[in-house]
Length: 124
Image (cartoon, rainbow, N blue to C red; front, side, top):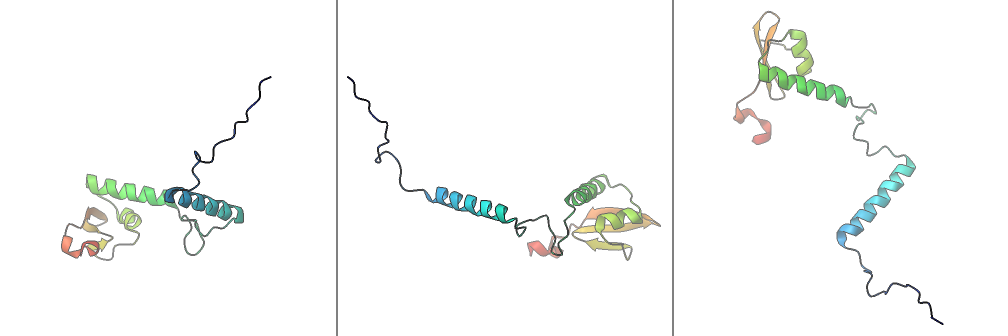
């Protein structure tokens, strides 16, 4: 008769230690499972500080429209400039967020980027 041999893995061939990346991955996976079970919204980056959801679609559209207005140099109305800048222009030249809105004539504006590097806060 033939004897049957069990297929038991040899302990010497199995790694007993985890690499640092593997351990970190397991810890992260366990943490994410725990957070999802608890229903915690502490890591929801779509939420604003006051608890309302951020409208990321509207933000994306606003940024795309701002880029298109700058690239084409199209004349814009005061209402359109207000929508793109997020504030109504108070004078013939209004600067906000690295953008410059210049009034060409009554209710006609042109939007451009501010080119002066010395006034750029982030590069100083």
